[in-house]
Length: 496
Image 1 (cartoon, one colour):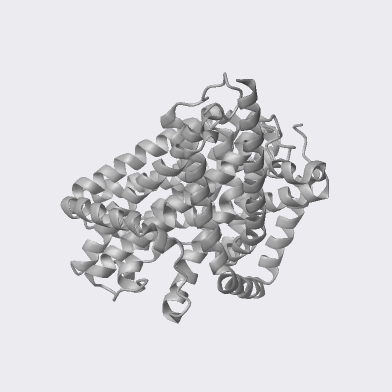
Image 2: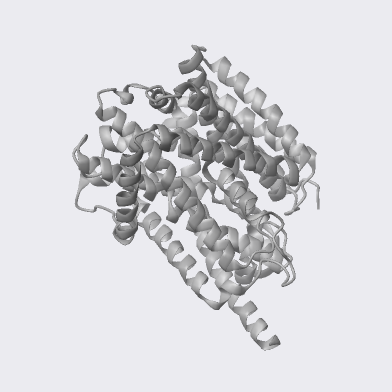
């Protein structure tokens, strides 16, 4: 069970071939993947909007249905981790680095550079910027993660199946999922995970470097980013070696403490009343407009459609490409919870915290921008630090932010090595350290090599392309889950 399978060897070979293409012909690679990505955005934008909206509807249906009482495991099982640790772990794996990287810069971009529909720099653009950011990082994303994770957790812990994407499709395809079809599904999941995490590691290294450059004048050079990746790789390998109950657990708790501390500092030292008032209004508007936002495709407005392609459709594809990794990790740490408790925790807690985060950081950055300091002049990885420089205790907040990016960086990579180990050892819940470390080094090498040729854009394109076939797998997973839940519920009713 703990030995590498053909999924490992096929996926590893595909990763090497893709990276090799990116290194040998970076411009051709970026142009080719960019063309395919543009076509997918244009032709399948409506599809991504529909699938994300439907997944949210399915979550609500399951929460209020009798299925919600079913436990992820035996009826006697209870959660392995405390609620705080559980939420910290799924949150850290889900979008940790992204929150810090885009916390100030995305709302600022929607306000000052390219609003969705309002005029740049206006009060309408201010409010719209926050609403759209909540939308991109909010309830739809976590509903999608929640449904995929629920499928994995149900089949793992309730039905005793291996922790693989392919096993969740057995209610539809039976034993055929043990053959080439199942291998194809699992290889796709591994491929998307490697490149999704490699991109995140590249962003993390760039932001740590940006923070050190802004604060201490460190050179923003490739070799510095390689040094950062090297140090972090060593740290997450140590963490991965120590196992789920030590390394990832303690790091995730540390992440949450640092994130809450930074959020409180921004709330207190930033424009507090403005943050609270704007968050109240814009979060309310986000909830109120959830249905219209979910289905907005702007078919008759070329400019707005272009914005949706570049932001919303990009994000939906981006999050779908992350689903194999994040959902498998969420499933792994959720044994013993009821389906209702699981979905409410996975969907609502990160949505509310993430919206508070963007409300505080986005409002602060936009308020500083309106005061006459042009934060848009800074590269994305330095926007947060430039924002902090305008606040009391800015240096301390910047140091906390660098620490937070670093711990998120380690946790994401650590979680990913764990998931990749599971996927390439027939779903073992305790993959061997050798397999985890091999995947950990591979992820870091992919990030390092692609940074060296400026290939992060091409990697983003690649995983968005990979998201399209995986989205079809996701639909099949949901159908199989409903079929299995119905059978399970009927079985439970007969036993009463």
